Amino acid sequence: KKGDKGRDEKKEEVEFELPYNVKVRGPSEHFSRHLHRISAIPNDMTQIICHWTDIPVGKQIPSIEHRKLPTITTDDHVNFTPPTTEGAVDVRALIVSRYPEAKHIVKAFDLVACKNLTDPEKPVIQAYGGTSTSETDMETTLSKCLKEQCGLTVAPTEWVKFVEFQYRGKKPVVFFTPRSELELVLKPASVVVKPAEDQDEILEHIEKGPPRNVQFQPTTVPLMNLIDHKISGIPQETALMALVADCLNEYLRREMASKSLGYIMEYLERKKVADADAAERREVKNELKRVKTTTQEARKKVRMEEDVKNKEDWEKMVYGYTLDEKKEMVKAREAAVKESRRMEDAQLESKFKADCEAVDTGDGTIEFIQETNQEVFDTFQYLDKRSGRDFGSNQISKTKLCGILLSLPDAKSIASVMAPLNEASQHSSISYRTISTIRKKVQKEVKPDEEEEEKMVEEEAAADGEEEEEEEPQKKDAEMDEV
Image (tube, rainbow, N blue to C red; front, side, top):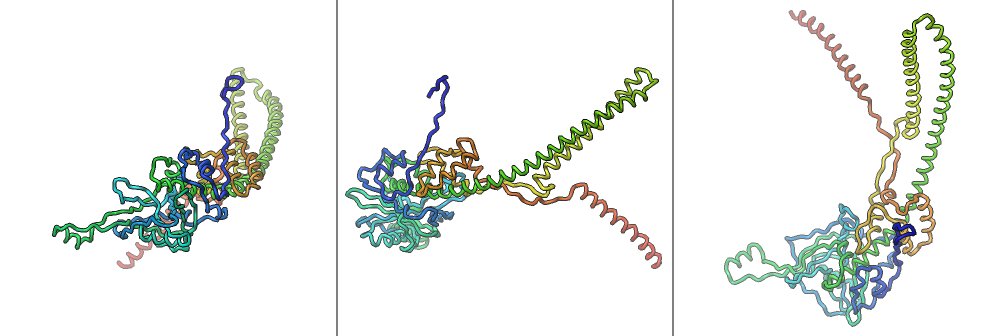
């Protein structure tokens, strides 16, 4: 908007996130957390039960945080068994893999899925799973489906209920995630194609094995694509994966927010120690500067007295010389005095700089290095990315950070963090590169000077030459003895 003087007044956008600890949500409440999907709320959805909220904050599921990429085999297949659709509840598997070399943390997470090719003209991306006859054997049914659909073996006791979608007049859909890390070796599920009556095809079928028609092809879907994609106009199974990706993203944001609180407190402690150390070194440098200034003033006073005395002596020395000779002698004398005093001032300044550098580096034996904690950087980078929006920069606004921290279940200590953070930086945003950078004091490796090395080489060469000179007469004496 325009201000009083016609200037554009900047309006800061304050972003708040709804509390993470709400377990049972209606469709409108869930989709209000993901506004880019608000126009695609399913009419028959009644509620969403976020079982992941029962997991204590900070107690991450290892299978979600592990950094192993899935291995998709092409030589080995499993015999395709069509999943049953008759039962009380649909069960699906939420399997997460992570790409450790991704440039952005959101791009690092992938969801393991399969490409349903039962209708080759309309392939569908969906999660592995099937239909359970009752709610008591959901984990057993899901383990059986994964074994039949991709050859992955997971014990029924390894499943953790993650989220549940309930509908009006339809079976609920429950997503489970593994409790621990898995060796993700996935196989395509295919059916054997019967050979034709041709004799050559029958022989090829016997030698090379039966040809197969793939029905379920293992694949991975980036989490970023799912949380940013709109769910209107896509198959229901793919839309389900997008909805569970929203829940996974919220779970990860809760864990990242919990971590960020501790990281900010560590940063403030480091900054407090660093500021105290800098203040101490600054005081020492100020004292050195005061000594330098005192020395300069005393030297200036002495020089003024010397000038008065030298003037009297000079007048006696140049008595009897011509005017031109006096001018030349004065010019030469002033140049000599000026050069002498310049050298004295340069020595004082050089000593002052060396003393100041010694305060920081400890006589050249100490140096400072900066290291970036990538885990801390990734945490704030993940929080800076919002669903359906562009990637953030290396700066996160304090209002956004405050809104994220307020969404944690325990938000009592946020005031004690944000107040010192505002004192530490007067800007409206803070660089998470600054928070993740650690400045360390290390012992510097002392290397010999090049001149000393050359001198040592020359001394060694001279010593070798003397030995050779001593050996030559001995060799001649030995030759004469032989003659």
